Length: 331
Image (cartoon, rainbow, N blue to C red; front, side, top):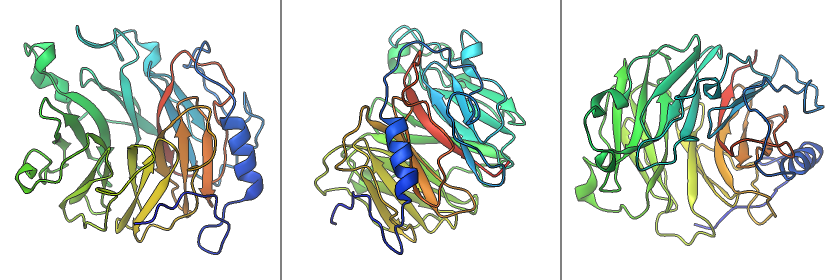
C-alpha cells in the first residue's frame, strides 16, 4: 500500500491551510522542561486561540500525569498525586502514565499508569477495576506493561491493553466490557512482528482492534480487518490507532506523523515528510465532525479535516513529555 503522508488539499482531504499553519507553528516550538502540568490550560490562557463551546475539544496527557484541557472541562490531573504515575523497581520512579480516555459525556476521564496498571479517575469517570490489582506479589520483572485504556461506547466499562514478556498484547475487560480475545489467543495464526502500541473499539461494545508498531492490525469480536501496514516499508514505527465514529474503519499514525487510512476512514492529511521538533505520539478522531488530531511529544497539536485547533503545549515548558491525546465531545 502506498504511503499517504502529505498535507493534501482536496475534496476528501481538505485541511485548512491557516489552521494547519497555526498548529504546525505552535506545535513545533518546544521540548519538555519546566511548567507544572497540573494547571488548567485553555485556549484563553497560554494559547491565544478562541475556543468555541460548539466544537469538540481534546485533552493532552504528560508522562507525569499532567492533563492539559483545550475546549474541554478540566477535572484535575494525576500529577497532583505523588504515586499516581510512580513506577516499580525496574521502571523509572515517576513519569509512567501512558494513556488518557474520556467518558462518553466528556465530563470525566481516566488516566492509566503503564508500569503498575493503576487507573486514576476524574470527573464522572467511574473505576470498574484495575489490572494492577491482580499483580500483588508478582515480581516486577515478570509483570506486564500497560499501553492503553479504551472505554466501551456506552461508557460503562473499559478494556486495558497490556504487553507481557512474550511481546504479545493481552486485553483485560472491566465493567460491562467483554473480552473477545487478544494477541496471546491468536498468536498461533502468526503475523506478530512488532510490539502492541494501541487499541481502538468498534461502535457496538462488541469488538476492538490492536495495532502493532510494524503496522500490523489484529481484529477481535465484531471488528473487521480492513487492512494494515504490516509487511510494508515504513519510515517510522506506528504509535497509535483511532477508530472512525461508525466503527467501520480506522487510522494508523506513525511517529513521523504519517497517517494511513483503512475501511471508511478518510485521509485528511498527515505530517509525514514534514519536519517535526518532536515525534508524534498519538492520534484522536474528532467527535461530531470529520477529521483528526495528531499530538507530538513536545505538546504540539496538528489538525486535519474539520477537526479544529483549540490550542497546544507546543513551545511551552513541560515537566514531562506529552504521551497521549483524547478527544472530548462539544462542551
